Amino acid sequence: MLVYLDMSKNRIETVDMDISGCEALEDLLLSSNMLQQLPDSIGLLKKLTTLKVDDNQLTILPNTIGNLSLLEEFDCSCNELESLPSTIGYLHSLRTLAVDENFLPELPREIGSCKNVTVMSLRSNKLEFLPEEIGQMQKLRVLNLSDNRLKNLPFSFTKLKELAALWLSDNQSKALIPLQTEAHPETKQRVLTNYMFPQQPRGDEGKLSVEISPIRI
Image (cartoon, rainbow, N blue to C red; front, side, top):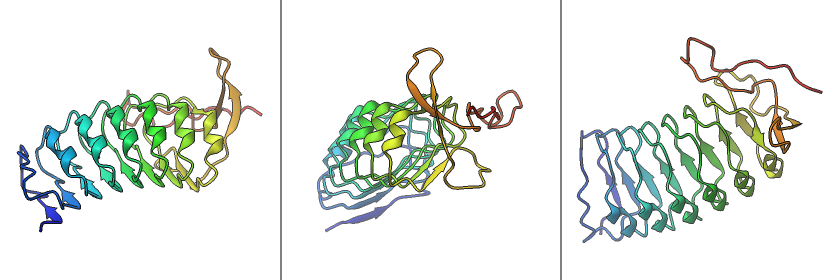
């Protein structure tokens, strides 16, 4: 009975997943290949607890990802993803989520339903804002948001009482930095900010990754 399968670093271009004989699979490692998509049938691997598809060429994830109700660790870093499926909100067992170095401009609101996530890394994307629902992820302890385009953080961040490390910059000296409450200049809604906002991505017109703005008291 197959429970662990590692096909990393094999230059695999496609995965024609025949579910026959794979129902008991718990760990599937497909890192460092040349995959452009995952088959819908991956959602039939109901016992998966670990899925690693980092360092591929994925442009989209199938909606059936949401069927992996026992998934605890999901790494899809270093791909070409421009969105995450809303069905990611069904991953109620998820504890570690890594989506570094993709092209995400936003997160689905449903991400807030992943309430057992303790570590989430979204480094080096194109995020300009985060959904208010992220405040529902109250078990978050480590959150990496460095090298994005965030102008502020939603006020719901104040609900993340377990947060011990919030990374907004690669060269940040402290794991957790103080945030100030401000009113958004357009919506007048309360947001959180500090001297590291607004972020400026590395390599963008030769500027530094973070613009330093004065702190408002």
